[in-house]
Length: 160
Image (tube, rainbow, N blue to C red; front, side, top):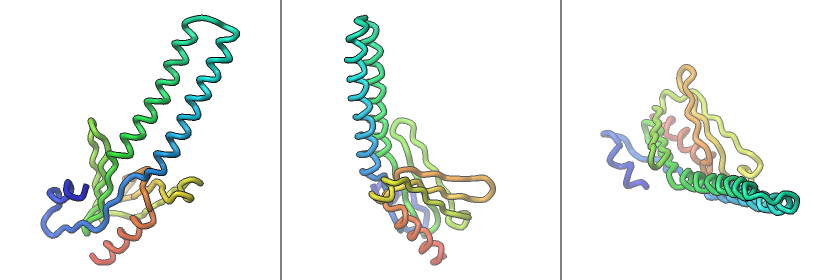
């Protein structure tokens, strides 16, 4: 990943930290959605014993497919989320087909918030929210080692 960002750096800009989405956040999401797929299957079996209509099967197939698509979506988030801290700015990239790139200069960051749910605390991932001038906020979810990212940003700001 670092090779892709090197051509985007401006003169005098150095890559300090490279972050990524946490595999643990993805794994927990897969487990959660897989449990829902199993529950949908058991609900289908239970309802089928009372109502034997082909439409019931189709409805439950659609519901299970939606949960499967949620797993695929989470996988795409995992492999396409990139976070870079340079000595001048923070660069966050998301998406595969619809690519979104967000940047904020280090000197424009007013606050850094880190939110971690219970599993985020256990497996060291979380959502980071960078606040800039005005109402500008840059939220980045599923970031692995958010405190390391925060420390890299604070170190970069101290050097400038």
